[in-house]
View 1 (cartoon, one colour):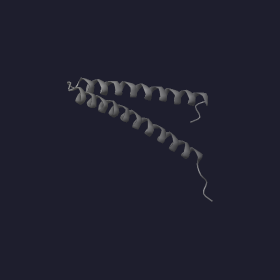
View 2 (cartoon, rainbow, N blue to C red):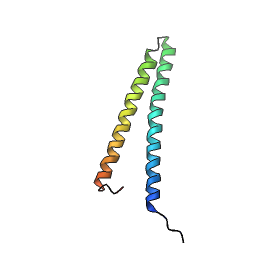
View 3 (cartoon, rainbow, N blue to C red):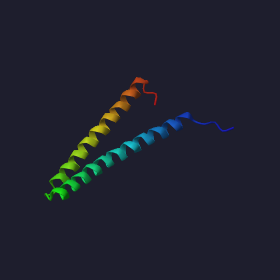
View 4 (cartoon, rainbow, N blue to C red):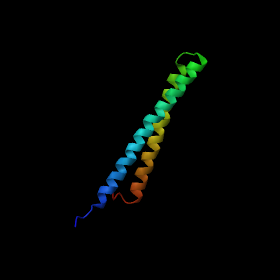
Length: 83
């Protein structure tokens, strides 16, 4: 019988976690940029809202990723760094 390595499943879970974090990061930037484009078109303004929305989305997405990574590191340290 083939023995399964439990570490393999843990690594897959971590990979999925980081993939979701990256998608969340990119999606936040795109959504805020699109909201800025919509506002610029609706108000007939220069691309101020597009630029502002993109920058705001990037900053908020970065902070979100930073906080989630810090939480993952804190949990890893609480478990004794066994992962």
